[in-house]
Image (cartoon, rainbow, N blue to C red; front, top):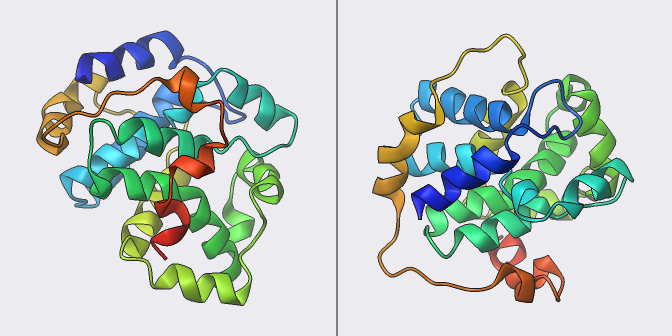
Length: 204
């Protein structure tokens, strides 16, 4: 299963998503930042894998370029749920919602976002309303989602040097859950992605 994940990085990691670095470098930087901040193994794994949805459906990148919401976070969480528990999948599922929350709740946060991240915000629902922020704060994964988001925001540096992907193999192995669940992405994509990820809403 880890080899399957690494194969996706090998095949699609060089692609870009509107930032100045490749997806693989962004995801490695996210994991390196989270690890340097003392995050748990599962949160580091979430940081490493949070944008894997872009690897799973090539259409997501075209959707982003068109200014529409790709729901890449929901697709990522859905696919990862066959391997990992909610300590990994829920922060992944909620990292876009965390951006919406911080744009509403933290003065100056929007201004420090990258140009690409600002551009995608509108398609993703814009800053949360007051009722949404109050609900999001009650999520058991609120702190993890915010921590992942902050690592994500810091992981767009063309000059940052990170460990290679292989560095995280043992950590991913620790986070694997018992009893893998297999499913077909092609079949799942026949319905809206959000329908398969109840914890994107029900967990808060």
